[in-house]
Image (cartoon, rainbow over all chains, first blue to last red; front, side):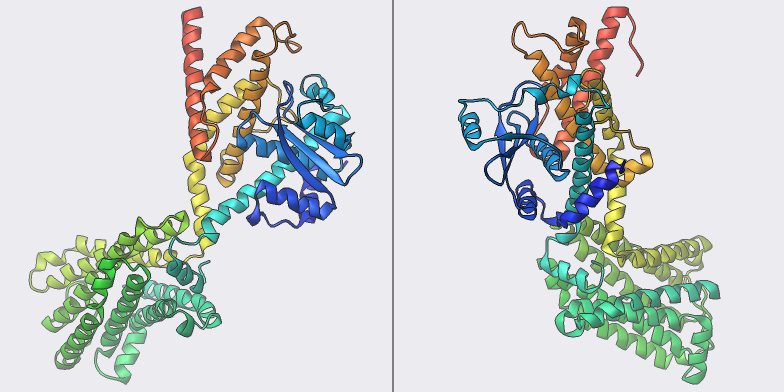
Length: 176
Length: 377
């Protein structure tokens, strides 16, 4: 079995994404273009114990990511990354139709989330679903590591100085 | 000074000058950025100064030219180094006061160079071989040193002030630290040249040339030379240093967050895996990452417990939960209820720290009420 971390790093390298540009929207768009799928992300009121879900469109080349609407923005970004990781890892997921989606988003229907909600409390660690969760979380954490590394550099180096003259001066001296 | 130290400092100065040379040529700094070019010329003159001060080289120059000529060269080149550096700082940090003071720099340099030349031609060139001692051997040597060291002290103070006036306007942390390093270098230089002035005055009043002042002067010189080299380090070094510094600062914050994570783990198993607690060394290297992961875990646990506590009436508790578990989980939920959950990440961390301490306190009080004793941790 391939080490999940190595697997994650390989997937990330294949994306060739510049984390200096990271915003969740930009990252989702990048992956969508790379994989030839339109990735749509929606906040949703979810049932207890469920934080996010990824579903694939049966009719169109669309992927749907749902994340819990009532958690802080920072948590929402994490959930989206976790679900994106499932997609990047090529995990199996549930299929839906546009009709079902429209009904769910307008509050007239329900998405097939019931199975997912039970995951945390009932699935054993050796279960394939649990293994997929671990893989996905590891990939999400590797992505987050990259974001933090780059946003730190971004803050500290791309914005070299508040003053343009000082930035030029440091750059020409070879300090940047 | 020991010849080995003289040569080491000389090599260090040439190293600083040569490291910057390719970048200066690559960017054609003499055309595109005159400030950067001035700074490079300053490092070059500083290297020259250090070369003239190496005793065997100085002696050779004196033998080939005129008596004590190496001293005039060294003092003139250090004056030029200071002038170019101060000029660059004052134009790079263009506060109104810096711009006002800028106009006096050139006349003051010319005055100093003129005075040094006069003292040299009429007095220093006619004295015996200059042997560098803490206290000058002749009045000419004292005048020569006082001219140079007073100039150097004033210019170092001006440089430190030029940077200091700008410091508050800088918002990028790493550049702020670099400017702070320059302020320290300039202040160290000013202190060093001031001690040299005092030692020079030891010619007229012996107690001023005491060994303790001499020792202090040597220490200041070494510190300034090291800071000078440090001010020219690449930004990546500053970035890494800043990251480590942050790691130290946030280690205790991480302990508080870990306490919350540990408390949550008992009631809310993580969805995928339990992250291992990093060692101090690992944390220092990736402090922001670990704090971020802990924060996410707390958000996750809080939402999960919230779901259970706010479950519909009559709905079953998760497997293994009892009413006591609900009560304990509620204690954590209450501690996390009013946390700061959006906006600046560091405010969220601070908010979690407060929640963590409140939880520890409430548990401690609860234990005292129930069992008549308080746990120590």
